[in-house]
Length: 151
Image 1 (cartoon, rainbow, N blue to C red):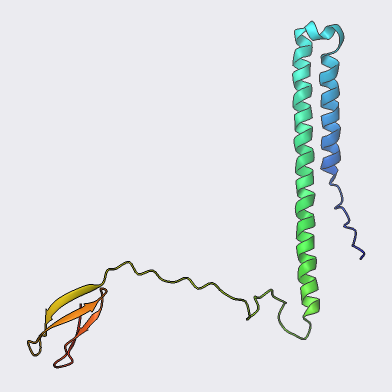
Image 2: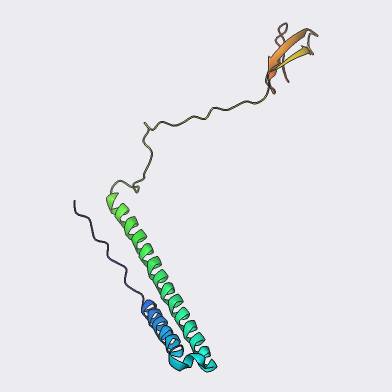
């Protein structure tokens, strides 16, 4: 099976400028630390300047790479959207990835932690005493007159 080759996104000019700055900065730092110049304080400052230029070049190259990566990603998203629209011409909606109706779901069982209570109650309608049992809140029903009272 053949696979499509991915084309690398074009390189932003700041990447090349940053790599050039990094190379120049490293060359300046190496020059300042070679030979007898290593003992001169002036060349130590030049070496630090070379290191700063190299760091700036590295950061500039990284920024340019990030810019092109973001542009390539936006471009791919646009192509994906256009492709989905061409696939759905006449259908009216872009394709979705929906779960099949035959997918089995795990049903979580509700755990009721309230204890079962047995209460001695008196009906407010007929004054009959009776026992009601259940987990609060529940509705107690009088056996004599069928009056219901929430408990």
